Amino acid sequence: QVQLVESGGGSVQAGGSLRLSCAASGRFFSINTMGWYRQAPGKQRELVATVTSGGSTNYADSMKGRFTISRDNAKNMVSLQMNSLKPEDTALYYCNAEVVGTYQGRYWGQGTQVTVSS
Image (cartoon, rainbow, N blue to C red):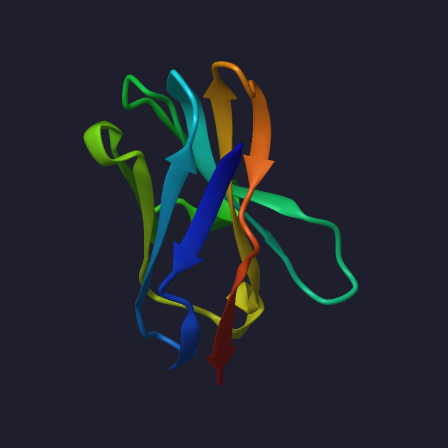
């Protein structure tokens, strides 16, 4: 199977920064797109940012210029640097990976909480 483990969440004041990381492990041949999504209480899960194996990135409009997604293909890791955080960024952040191999499919991490206070 495939496991995604996130780390780096926490609490910060508005204007602060946090860095999230996610490591994929298990049996797979490769990983196509990796990304981050978030879900605030009472809201639907939404896209934060994605990055392909070739390094192409995609961001939700509200994150552009504040968040940076990066990836280490050799380590099967994806990170999200979040700067200029706002209270509305408070949510549970999930890592996502599209895996190729025996257990091909889309996998999710367990989520890491980010709380931004005003």
